Image (cartoon, rainbow, N blue to C red):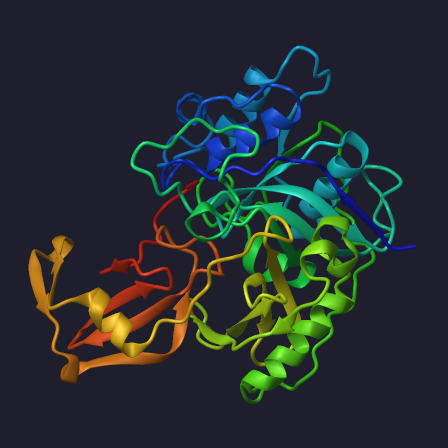
Amino acid sequence: MAVTENIATEYHQQDTDFYCGAACAQMVLHAIGAGHLSQDDLYNDNHSHNVLDSGVNWYSPPDGIEWTLNNRKPAAFANHFVLFSPATEEAISRKIVWTLHHYRVAPIALVYGWAHWIVIRGYEASAAPASSVDTGYAINGFFVNNPWPPTPDPAPPPHSTGDICGSGGGYGIADEHISYATWQGTYMTGTPGGYWAGKFLAVCDPEPFSEKRGKRAELKRFFNGEKIIDKKTAMQYALRGLDESGVRNHKTIKKVITKVTAADPVLVHRLDRSNEFYYIVPMQGANKKTVSLVNVDARFGNYMQSAFAATEKSSINFKHLSREAILKLLGRRISVKEEKRVINIYPEAICIYPTLVWMPCRESLSPYIPFYMVTVGSHRLYVRIDGQVFTHLHTDGIGI
């Protein structure tokens, strides 16, 4: 019988663009009774305990995350945390499921190669695991707390229960679901270099894991991928994905999307993968406010992932930008500090790429926050969907 388990793990966003490890540690430590510890302190703990991979410029290294969780856990918490680094995605994913099921604690996982840390607070599977080495069940998806984006305030206020984190827009999205296929293809992709090259990392409970291959859920693809599906079709399959993924049945999500309609989608091109496209389909409630975002594969129509407003009374800020709005944001000239030059903007001489674009980068570690790509001569500019303008996208952050 299919099972869903979701561990109560209060959402908080990271206080800087490199504090993901600190924010994840804050969330997990709070969940086990440590209170809302300072992200500054947690980051310093993480960063100063890079023992095994000192040749790599980690912001929050894996062994640093492990050390911080064990060093700062409350005395009443009898368990301890262990960094696992198996050679397969399946092994670490099943290890995450077992930690959630048996120990009732959310693991912290390294995703987008070695770029970013997120909290895994729930899973969906064909059955609950019988032991830490059980491979007889199929994983269907994960519920996650992604601490990105950073808090927008220059001086982030202390985090507390009921604070503004997770309220949408620049304050992050507290409720996200990832299909297992998207987890495999976009998130848990393995560490590309350094001490853990080729490994898949998460900080979990101490029980052993199995490297054996087990039962897998079938990936449903509805089209042959020879062309990009149209917007109307994307809207239909986004609604279908909400039903078939089972997320509608989750008690908190069910309240948010009881009566939703699909609104105008945006098409996004993965900049780092030339043949991958997805639609972000906004879901609107009765008051026309966006309460959910659903990502659908733009070639095959399958459900990828979804995000939800914190409550049925809140919403997610998601707006298209017109050409006029993009030009207004760009202004008349842009300084490119890395190249010590200025780019003059002439509306008649720019080209806006026909789709939005995204890849994991310091400027966006969420696929729900893509960019408009503007070509000015030989240079590219990036206007994030929330209105921020960038001259480069940086993909060199490790553990941010």
